[in-house]
Length: 94
Length: 486
Image 1 (cartoon, one colour):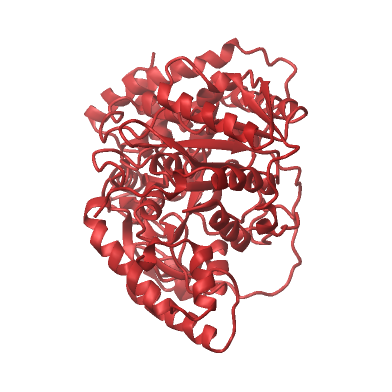
Image 2 (tube, each protein chain N blue to C red):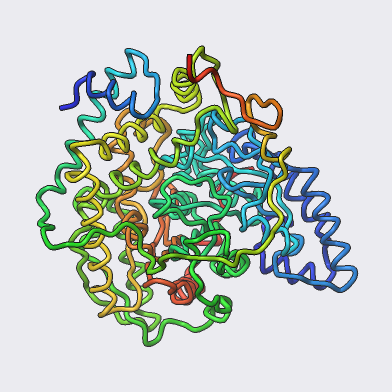
């Protein structure tokens, strides 16, 4: 069972503002889906190594060479607000 | 026959012989697109002007006797979660409604270099999260075979566009079945390459350990041609594999003599549509008749696929989608402080399914639940890989249904997210194990809805898939049937 308080806690971690209606709905739906996921508990996995991805690649490096990258203007072009070549955000510290 | 009806390889031959021009072909495809689009809603952006320019450039190249690739002058569509420089890329989300990428995805760069013509960006479930394309923030794409039904998802726009001849071929992406499921439901060919075969640079990330780009095409030959154009190592994607790319068209005429086909018993389950089961079993019998040896195999962890996948994919999604914070790109909803700005931006920018998945992913990664859900699912993932490794000791390729059901009605599964997730049960294990798989038409229901056959091969076994699929296609008429769209 997932309570609305659980939903609020997770929504805060995920930085999502939810309406009262969404909290009610997600509590019910997440409860049902997580309940379904609990079937995995019945599979014995004590000695099984976890897989995070399927490739055998580790520490992929490339040569440290100069290449064309985005220009400042391109990098800022989609930003909601910019000033003096920076992204602008609302006040963070009082 | 109208030009938009043809396949890539047929059109390439005609372009090379000078019988048609890329400009005329592009005009024909754009006019077909406009004739069907108000019923299908396959596209989010149509790039007619760009297409005309590219077609003219292709014609100029042909006139110089320069043929860079089989895709030169061919009108293609791109799923709208793949970045196209200067062309809006929305992921079917309010969050990215006005996002214009400053760079091309590697696959797009390769298509442009191959001389292809880009006709537009296709609809999808928001951020590729869904199995019906109904989760698009903008419009629900319709299935060309029955306008009251979904085209499958999440690459439903690409699949519907190919099925309706509103492009010659398309690219999609597949995280848990998002190429194969819509291909099956719209009667086209969909190929999900091995994890690492195709660069994901410029593919908007959903679940990074599962996502792969692949083609949706009218036939198997075209799938080989598109894969050829996009496959190969890319230094900009650290997960792209430094494995040589073979000539895929060489695999097409080899037949199936001497190959062993495994049929996993867990993929024929109670509750699956009897017409789907009959069509897939008939396809297996057909391949046997063509000379393949058939074998009963077991993939014992199959029943746990959906639970495993929706833990891992949502955990990765919750992390990947943290970047949508209203700062560098995308929507921003103003607020007095920065945390409230994040919360309101994300509340307004994401649709219900995306929020649900972010919530689930955040939950399974949060303190106290990580071991029971996330780590457990990663261990299951190891067991899925072992299941396949075991099966491939005894056979070269696996044959299964793509989906337990044909295309369902719009709205039918929206109320119950879990029911929607279960549509992916036969496609998900392939992503968990990083394998290549292809979906191709293998019949129709009595109501005239397409049914898909899935073939699965070991890592980097795309040639085997194309070999078996081409042999099956050559012996059957299903890929030639057209939806009754006027």
